[in-house]
Image (cartoon, rainbow, N blue to C red; front, top):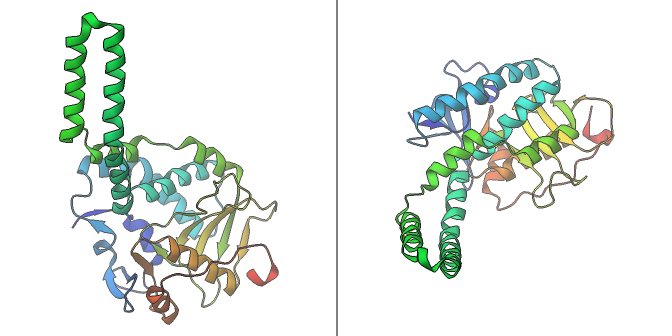
Amino acid sequence: MGKHYIPQEYLRGFSIPNSEEQEIYRYEKNSSEPKRLPIDKVAQMKELYPQQVETILTTNYENPANKILKRLRDGFHPEFQDRLTLIDYMILMWQRTPYKRDEIKNQLEKEVPKRIQEIKDETDRLIQEMPDKKDIIQQRRNLFISKYESGDFSNDEIWLRLLIEAKFPLIRSTMLKMNWITVHSEKDDYFITGDCPFFFTRGIGLSNKESEVIFPISSKTILWINWYNIKKRQFKSGHSLATEINKRMFSISERYIYSPFSSNWLKNYCLSETVQLQKLNLTKSLFR
């Protein structure tokens, strides 16, 4: 078994009802038929990161969040301290996937020629200012350039360090200012999740009043974080709201979508090139 980039405890909130082996339906984009699989077999990849890193992620992020996830699944609303923990957990879910790792590695690889040129320019300047130190400066320059060209500055290592150390203070502070709404589905409606379960409005920044964050807690509960000026913190969703939330989770997924049920509408999504998103707002048609 590989390292899970979506925690098993999180995925259990979307498991098939009454499944003896804790199973889940895994849908794949561009494929119509879902697979019914044990949760410990999905959202994982061999040698994704070392055991030491997995232990840190489990101890510092997953375990504290699991207690809060359970309370939210039982109908509670997150308090301030809960939100701090959940923000770190959501950001981790966004950063730890193999897709995000590849994106970061590609960005870093593009930066290598730029960084090498910066080193050359800076050392040329130093040689002009300190000609008596020319040999030492050139030795240092060649050492750093050779490290970049040989890959000694591991992109994987940088990505792993981001997972463990990065706190994204601007995202944290902005999300704490937003309104946190817990939405519960009713009757036959349910929520899905995916291989990138942290949805946020792209391209305009979280501080924009049109921005929103959606994070599924279970097949019956999601967090909807937005800028609406309202006092009520918990709602029961109407069918149209559940549909729009699921469209968002589908759109942000890179490859896989996870669901407690096999359904035709989700099969159709998987065969579609795009899913049209509608703006969410607090109208009566969205809530029961």
